[in-house]
Length: 273
Image 1: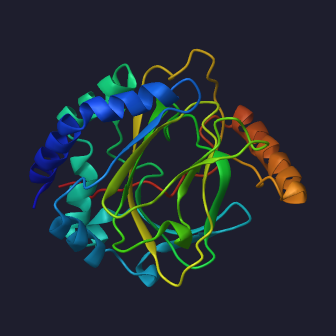
Image 2 (image 1 turned 90 degrees about the horizontal axis):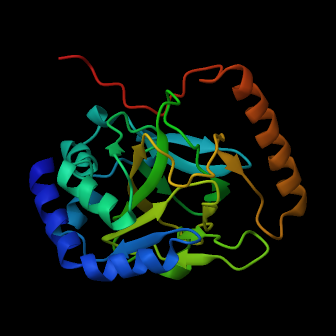
Image 3 (image 1 turned 180 degrees about the vertical axis):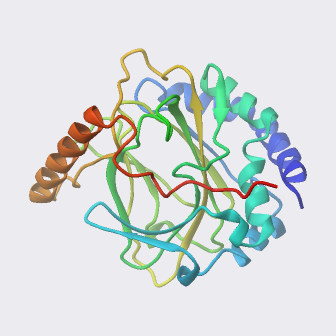
């Protein structure tokens, strides 16, 4: 399977579900817009993606008070099908259809996979509530959509590793989007798109293929530049204060160094052919 073949299948599934996912997005867009599509690919293809996913020793561990997960972005080091499925989501037809559903102007997929690629989380790993970085690596485009495709078979909601969105802030209950096998979840990203991943409570790995879409215009007129900004969970009062100080310090640095002090390593560096 190549990316065009994957894209053909994904596109048809989105077209088939367009009415339902449009209603889902429209009913949530006033806060944090989202939708999901189940059974995105034929089961045997989703199982194959899971089967060839890199092991933790082949990925990069990101571990701090903010997050604990494995990531992979240098796609030429892994099974070719993984690069094909990632870039299938960047097919112009799919980008334009999802942008139409989410009312995105001038959608632009990210060929560099800045903060995208593959991610994997195992027992006790987590991702704290946060806002994604508002821009791309060059700070030229606005991040507007987050696409997450889950490929772990037989995963149960109680295992954790689910997408959580906080449309009414941390003082109110979150909405949990189950990281169900063969499900694509799409979420809008803007100044209020606070989201997290629930801690894993199972001795197994939740695997995800992720993409971001960007635009020359922000999703909302009120959006402003911000670095990736982490918070503590409602019960983590002290950690929340620590993380807010860290956010402020990093924002201060970016006011002086607009593109950061060091190059972000989470970018696919392709060899010139």
